[in-house]
Length: 403
Image 1 (cartoon, rainbow, N blue to C red):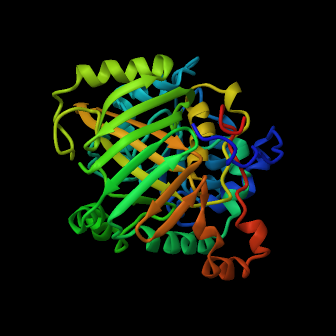
Image 2 (tube, one colour; image 1 turned 90 degrees about the vertical axis):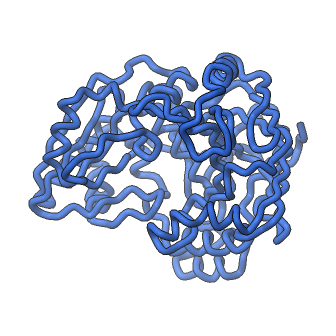
């Protein structure tokens, strides 16, 4: 492990939110704006039917504020509060539980058939969980928030700056043919990419949005078979910190897992148990393929410092939010459907990566180089001091690296 290159940990002072009224101005803005990927927002109109599927472990101040703001817009709002997973704090168990929708009673989905908009604050991740095919085709979205995150700088960050950061970073990534990814925890991965890999990776996004990438979350092609080396992490995106875990990667898939405590045991068991599962876009069977390599781009992001006090849905939201920060490499393993309602996929994060392509250095020790680009700084200057707007708000503390 390389030491001494990571900046010191940094977390802004964060006040506790004690009253729903503190959140109302932000909630009103959220229900009045269109979403920009990785910005919560749904423009709610008068007369629309809004269903919030909530659970007892989610932050109830957030639910109250969203409900109140939607009612003020003239919408019809119903809130279903399920029991949730009280007491759930284990990262591996949290991760593997939230990608199933079968803990939602059938009558919840029946209620969703009468809604125009379904907001999920309860324990499920709609982007990866196989949801029912509802005949009314409502707009369904996750709002992964705690009260303090609703009031964070991220919610006020100018989208134009973030989108310009994306443009510059994408120019350094798109159609690159080689990638060297290292990090201060011990990752050392090489990738070779082809034009066909890039075409396959961008096709769906082009068809959906007309752009080859999702803003805030730029993706390298994955899975690809020309990917080899060692990948090391100590953070589960939808669960929290874990003992350092080392993955030996050969030809695009994890061949061995070293360490990781209970989380490592969970992975080793499932990789063996599902080695013949073949229900995904992967080149072969198994749930051990590297299926996502994403680069996040917003410097204004932080997690909730109250993470350790929370459980279930609020705990997931409090930690997960941090993976949106500029320079974080967001990676997933597997994506096989175990049942029609449950996908097995594990997401993890690296905070101090260096990513070098044949087109240049994209990330250096966790710092996204696009933040220093003259074009980005020029746009940031329209909104204030570029030095402040482009400085990472949060620097994570990673044991053995900078803490």
